[in-house]
Image (cartoon, rainbow, N blue to C red; front, side, top):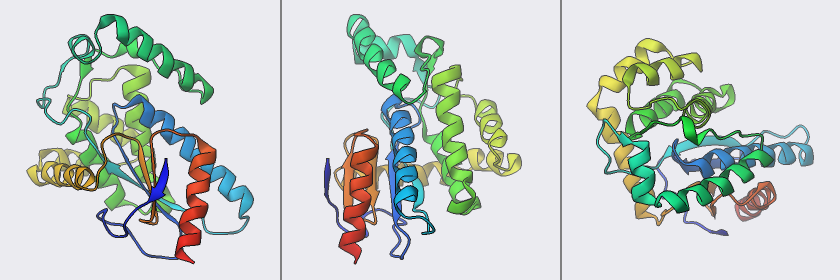
Length: 237
């Protein structure tokens, strides 16, 4: 749903002429993968409506669906049974897969063996945001790489070597990635961002915030996201 959102509650929110979009999500959330495709479609519609205008700036923010998982994660099968029950899980993933097909996402849930704690992956996404500029797309590429690796290839995101390889293939400096994963402060920074999101009432993801003024909760489609962009721009006028 679209609703007003206080300015300045999300760390790093910017007050500029360019429309700024903060997206709070997790790399093991299938609806977040769908939401990414929906915001991409919404941005394409925005570009069509505003030829020659500066494109909105997107920043990816962390959220942990399972903040209490240990660093080594747990068996995916055990996780699914505990979370949904074996019978219900089939229905849940059938629905997600059906929606995913609408956005050319071929979810391969059967390939996933390990349910990870996602702090490490989020720290590399944050590093990509700090290392590049929004216009160069580095953070977006790293975010995309983790979503694809997990949901399409079943990559084990509990292993540091896998995280580094995925991020490096997306353009992140390998040495910086390795240093980031070895730095406890990087983990703490992600955990603090997660706590900030919860403090402003984020309970589920994806969660989109436009210019710190308008929020959309859930993967609600390109049209809803485009409407939120217009609302945010009107509020800033």
